[in-house]
Image 1 (cartoon, each protein chain N blue to C red):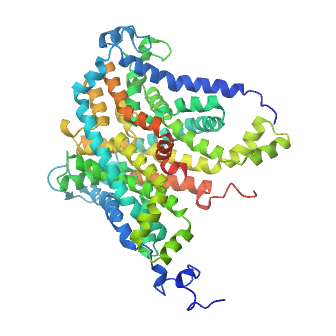
Image 2 (image 1 turned 90 degrees about the vertical axis):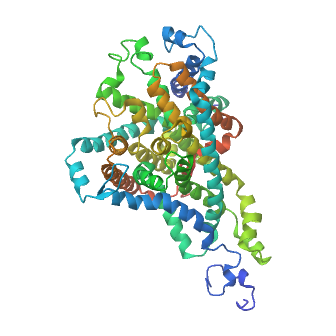
Image 3 (image 1 turned 180 degrees about the vertical axis):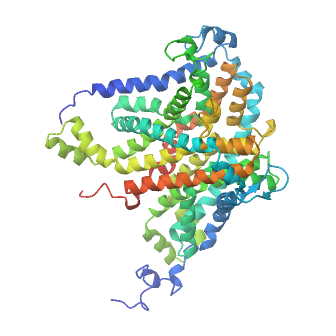
Length: 273
Length: 313
């Protein structure tokens, strides 16, 4: 193999893109370690001449501790619902002979095309009627529901790769569907299950529209909504606001560092298919 | 050849005897396994989809009772210039987004698909915007581009009069830029995955035929990325038409109604003016437009009879 000559154009393009992505993120972090007064004098693109963590502690006294906790509750519940509902669903989609099941699969495919924006008005109506307005449960339920189509598609794709020999072997042993599910299907689709867990966790953690229309008080606020309100109310406290932005991405960053593969697959959803 | 009565039922050809024997379905899950998820999804996605049609013929202010008003909402929207404008704006923003994001994410994705060490390190940084929520990204850029306290204030001249949010062109530019900044990494990932799956034989063959770097890109990479491109386009179109967070946080639909796209107009009518009937009608229109455009993309690109890129290998 001949050594390829370096690709200068691509190199320059890559550097340009690095600046475009890296610079704003660097500026964001550097603003958060300046005092509010220092930022006021220096502006966004000067080098910080002070160092402080007060913006981060300040974010917590502004209520972000509470928002963080709410977001954790929403995320954990959404993931729990998805993990409870989707594996049996995907198993049925792949293995069931019932005519209803193929109709169900088409229903979920149809669901892929329904944007959440399209149904916020009726969902607001339903949640209101169910007396779940301004209740975290009211955010959790629709968020989880809107994760289902993508998760069902990912997981049934994974389960389809289990060879039918394995199913037949278990069937000869007289295994009931429950046993096949626990002993064969679940262990062999662990990768797909972690993908849908990460996917739904991201949807819940970053979700904005449902919390925006379904909650209103401090006690039910999630991080994204907190950022939005923080911006409209304290437009001037830029270092504090950006510290909250940085805090909101820390958990995702941790997953990115330790489970990059699962995260990328989870981010991609069906896009990677 | 053994007869079916002798052979154990499960060893016979799977599909042939169907439901006849009963033994065929042994060990197979019934419909009950799919039931909980279906009911849950049906209640929060399918029922609302029906309800949005019903609500579009009613008047409701969020409290009190829902009243049937016939075609009143629809008549009002048909005569509403903001509504028509919002549809065009949604299409314009989507088209601009596609035009900006497709070439860039294609280049970055193909570049990042290389297995060089420096590319792997840089890609890790390139994909950072994906870790931020759309809300966080919008808030960040709102701060950075703020006319008084942001970068334009420090670098006067570079941004015109410094107030990007004050003019129609500026505001649209900001929206296109910010969504591109966040979503190019996502689409680049799609292309990266597809580019890595291109069989190396094809490049070797092209090299033998004397194709240079550009020739290989043009005649091997691009055709092989066809399916990835369609996937990416459909996601861009649906995502672009339903853009909401960025508009709410960055421009608030302004200046005036210059960036009031359909999804944002729906929010404004329903949750700010408390006219949920009109909101439902706009939402319904949004679904219809998004579906039609996706169908056109799918039909024109031939996604419905997606050709395998592995043909002839």
